[in-house]
Length: 149
Image 1 (cartoon, rainbow, N blue to C red):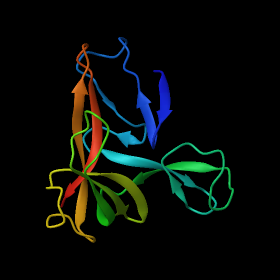
Image 2: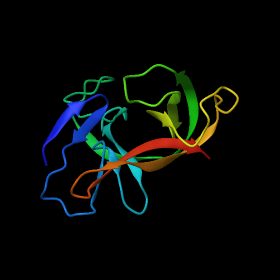
Image 3: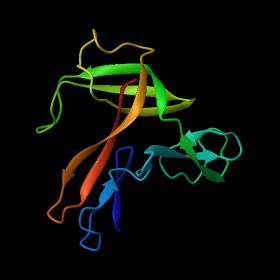
Image 4: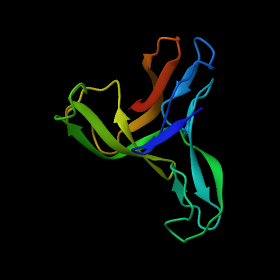
């Protein structure tokens, strides 16, 4: 499957070789199935974690990495309420940095009203997947966000 890098991950192009009704994750580091979760590349020298592919660790310059599962529960460490976005992007929404067991994850909050009365620092959240749409072949793109726990 061909892929092109954008933003914080890789967008997959769905091809007609995939099964009808298949699901594909929007980014390479989202693992679907019975227990959806994120997977990071962890430096084997210092333990720093990255979601994108690296030739060297930004922390220690090590060049060896291993795949590790990231906790699905976390705590909101920072957030902003986005009120202006590109055409076609629904606003407002909450963009946040989540501490998932020591791994920093950037993502949007879902299933919560985008105002400061409903979103707080230290708020517990859990990973949630959702459909981003289906192509003409019935292949569904799956994204992720974090919902209040």
